[in-house]
Image (cartoon, rainbow, N blue to C red):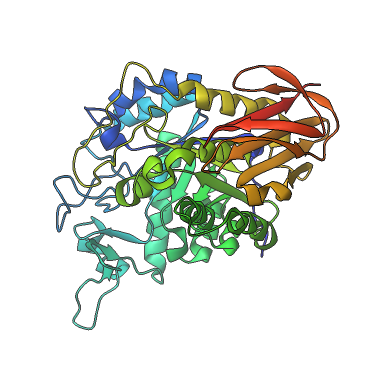
Length: 427
């Protein structure tokens, strides 16, 4: 377990992230069409927008009618399907004008068969004994980059600089970060640091050592465990054990990304409603109230209940009423105002472990005098019973109903199946 060589930006201590699937976000699937949603996302409380790859997609061995976003033809160009370079610049400016940040997906492990590097730098890619380019794993639309080639590493970092210096982006989400050697990412961050302060570095990995280069990493083990819990293949104790394990193996400064959906999960494994059923919203509450960074995927606030096609056009079916807008707005606002939810050495989390055998996930977060208590009913039945809580009698506000009540040591918990309550202590 190694601490980062870098300092995590202070604004990340209570931030949130929103993943944008540009192709499916609107009927047009463009930067300009996305821009019309920015005021709504700002009102919801979104702080960091992560855009899936914005680069041109390879034509050779393309999958489906539009290809994979992760089959990059040119690391320094904009996909014309999404708009022009100026359209993207304007989008970045609009995001910044609203006080939000933008990071872009970065694919450092593989590239399209017709990537622009191939003609002049074929040695940037691995070849087999017959001299043919090698697929990256079983993905036959992309070829494997040669990470030992120093020229490739320099070209890749220069391409990353291109987006920071010419477009003013605020960071990167590294696709399958652990497939690219850690020294590359450390070097990339060192070389990009002088160009813009406070870049965001998100790694799609659960390898603790990668926090030497990155601020944020994924929580796949938690995600898989709660899915198995919902299928009655794991206990809530098993899920809780993973949270405890994370404390032991990750650096104290590591931020973890919690989510109930992202582009891979939605398209390949199912929506959060397929995976978690009645517990989907309760787990979203957990993602927003546990220490780390919560992620919301395109359309979750609608809510979108369909799997979005990955290689073909399949737009989100936006409705006049975005039902979960205020749900996320309430949670994001709590994260901003209450230091008990900050990623800080002064924040403590106390789980009410005696409730786990009742399939109630309950915990208290404290930072100095501020406090939040969360109850999630992960049971197949409604809960109506007195529970003993290790807290002093104090006044708390339900953040969703705004009802104020005194919570005694012996508290009557009333929750329907899959429901939740989040209490904020009044000062």
